[in-house]
Length: 156
Length: 113
Image (tube, rainbow over all chains, first blue to last red):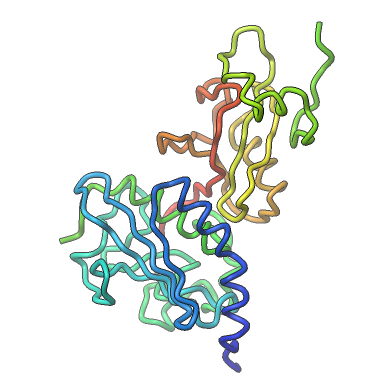
């Protein structure tokens, strides 16, 4: 399958930036869209630890495939469980440090994740309830925030 | 007695909504009211939409109505209050403690896997 051109992914993602910024403003998140890199950086305080939690969304191929969501050391691209919120009840934060949802590319078996039953990343928009559904970037951020608010701390 | 108010998505010229936007009407309790007007934000839309529902409306049904107005197709919609509480989809708006004029965020209540 031919990869989606960056220009198409950029246009799709950037059409959502006004809604991303409006959502972030309502919920106390800081967001930064890096157009050339097709990368969204989003940060908020963990409600229990008061530490900054930062998550990035690599949007190459968006919306043909979901973004790559990763929690990182704030201000860097360094990943690791110490930067990942611990899961609360029914959380999308997986024990292996990824976001486990149909809208998270790393959740798919093709990308090292646990899910081979969703039909692959290209079928992400067809995956339905009871899985968490989020088909735009601000909807994904909304779900991340809900689960962050239920997180008891950091994974490590 | 006031004329019955339409429920669902409220038109922009609705008098009660217009009054709220002008800051003339503060959120009220449930006394003497059969319906509740809610200002609903959705993550995918920078602009909120007003909805009116009977207080007896089940949260999940009201959220489904709001979701459709924002062009959400699939999912398990509910509402989130300003304090972060995600409403139980199985109870009425009244039991969930929503107030007239309250701002809510449309969210998906589907769980992690």
